[in-house]
Image 1 (cartoon, rainbow, N blue to C red):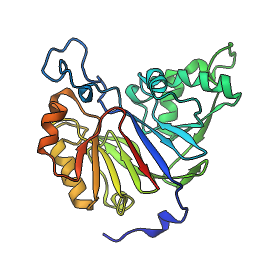
Image 2: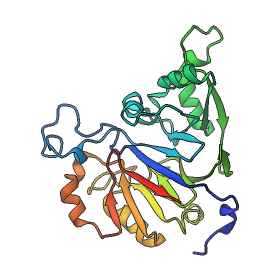
Image 3: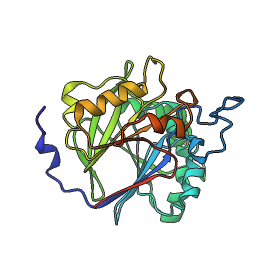
Image 4: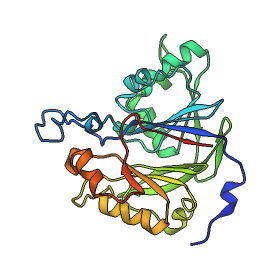
Length: 268
């Protein structure tokens, strides 16, 4: 497949990507589970719900606000947040939105939120009080920005949306310069795959070994990376069913790795 050069008209600034969480909807350890993964002492087996922090010299945003969002912001000592970019409306990706109010309190600015219409419907349903006609003090101040497949900018960072499928649900993956991030997917159409080609790093969900109705397995994620010939890849949205981080890492090719909470990647 040829490289689609028109997606790269805007030069991306140097970026730092931080994995805020790399776990599936239950997180790892899973509540009430006593398996060897959930009881592992390895810090890399402790996975909050999946999200990333994207930073340039002047712009900072997150992809998704998980139920762990408050702790993720405190752990990474994030003092500035310019925007939130959503992938889809499932609870493990939007539940922490209320906590953006702290950033607005200190900055004096409403939070810029970027989401497609489906995700906006979910946000309005889950956080109806934010959009109520009668507003009370202390609720989040947000500006909803509607996105589709058209590339756009958040501050100085170009964003290329990539439509993927989570069974029957459309989910937005994103490319930021040399970095592509895809979570909650089990199918990508050929035209959308072209947007990923020539990425230096691809992050994609790899839930477990056994087949799943709406997520890539580890084997399917590896096959996708091989098909697109991406030089470096990381797997995220991992469940305890995949196995311990150290054990799975031994099975992977040198150019592929499991992501873990707190991992950072920098691009110049």
